[in-house]
Amino acid sequence: MNINITTLVIPLLSIFGSVILSVLGSFLYLRQAKIDLKKEYEKRFNEKRWNTYNIFTENVIKVIKLLSEEHDNSINDLNLGFQKFVAEFLLVGSDAVVTSYKEWRVLSHVNGPRERETMEALFNVVIEMRKDLGNQYTKVKLQDLLGMIVPNYRRSL
Image 1 (cartoon, rainbow, N blue to C red):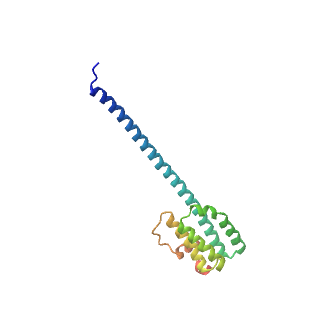
Image 2: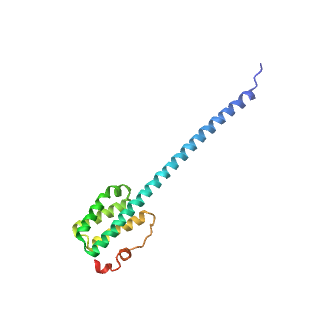
Image 3: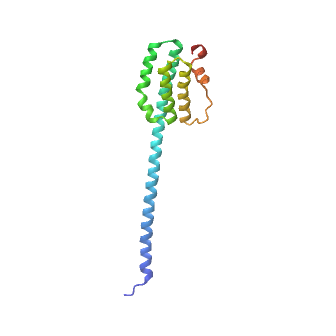
């Protein structure tokens, strides 16, 4: 029996090529699966962030309306509502949002909720949230936000 080198090399190259393509295909599949999983986690995180910021903003509106109507007891209840949602907020908020929230809470305890400096800090939290949600170049100011919620906000503060 006479063995020709080409009859041995061609099947070996075919097997070697198949193995390389299988490994490469598996590697690319795993890489894409990892990318897809990361995108899914980011999507879920962003949805959670949106919902958390939305809850915070709803509470801000309630606080502003109560401050303009001078309901001190209800404001204390709302402050407890803010504290209940802080754990979730700390998990999903950006560094800038968490820092501005902390500054607002400190000012709220030191100055009280009706002081202008406290209100500015509160709306700075909302502005940082807007930036965190993708509106990096927002030019909204305190007066714009307050004017949306309380038409006679200048008298309210």
